[in-house]
Image 1 (cartoon, helix red, strand yellow):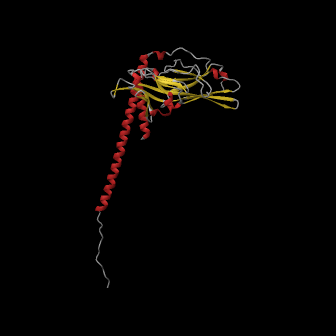
Image 2 (tube, rainbow, N blue to C red):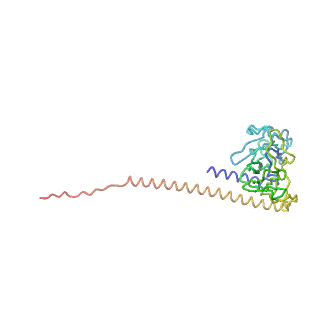
Image 3 (cartoon, helix red, strand yellow):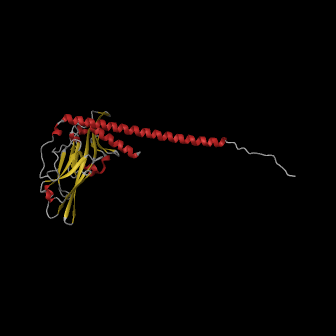
Length: 314
């Protein structure tokens, strides 16, 4: 039952994101260590953003990050990395995997919600390298708030014959090279959002020591560049935008279909569990009634004994 509640909560958050999303920027992909700013588009910017509240939600719970003009105590250890701009946008410094989740911005005036809500789905990209004898393996993976909706692949701008091995799995991709040469500067991790087909490119950079800042290619906004998907071993990347991304009518049409299908699945799940619960309850009640009837019959049963005439022999 707890697993079912988790699924329902996740489905609700995804549907809420689809309903409230005003554009493709609602799905945010950022690299570990970079900064990201989540804008508040649907609120009135009052002094110190006193009426604005920021939340982070997951399938487990919802936590307040900002309320009444200050960072909320529920933010915990991440509070020193959070700040809010004059326009009430939420800034997250040095993003970590723990920052993955659904972010919601709401405004309350006289204890009543004003306007709609800004909702963002934040995913975080992590790159690592592993050395094994005469070869090095680079891993690019994406941490998401719920099920994986991204395609991950490595793009290599050099000779494809240099690549020893590549592999892909859910929300991650690996590439292996001989350690005799350095290929990192020719590699990019491409993360493509399956919903809006937007591709985010991240140049591989070795793990940084404390105090170092990300390079110039760090993602610092909520609207990364859109490019068309390319092969993991191609000689370069194309900068031409996909025609599908430039057709807003088609995007709205597909989003409407996704919302309808999601709502139907959610309703069917709720009805199915409700019927199952009632059926189990009826079976339990019938079993108890049968057991009670058996006990009553045992109490009403009368035992009879045959008594015959005593015969004697002479």
